[in-house]
Image 1 (tube, rainbow, N blue to C red):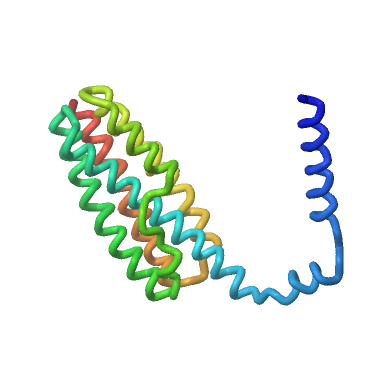
Image 2 (image 1 turned 30 degrees about the vertical axis):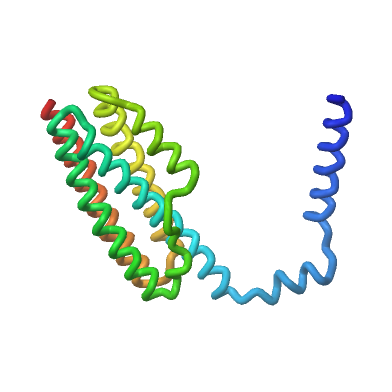
Length: 184
């Protein structure tokens, strides 16, 4: 039974490799006829999707923190983050409309993000507070890194402006989170 599965997997991989390496004229024709503008738009659409998803997740976790945190400092941090990410989402929606990418905006959290919210929802007391503060730091660092990469590739002025502003605000929020952390 295991041998059958391994053989099936091996043949499947071999088939995919053959397809990937094939240089049929039809495949080449499709590759060369795709306008560069469409490729760039899909990259921008992917960024808009990423930015909206992370912004919605951060807002939802901030809402939880403002309601459920044990420490008043973490509640205040959550309220500040909720306000920040709510405003960021509104601005991102405007950018997406201006760039014709409004259809790239997700309208709800993805399954992995919902699982993260559920994970946080199970925490209480200081365990919640500590996990939220750590998450704010690591996730915002990750966002900063991703946004820096986006600045290197994005050509749309509206997206670049939004990313620049978000970088400034994220750095300020990291400092704010550090102040809340040192206040305890």
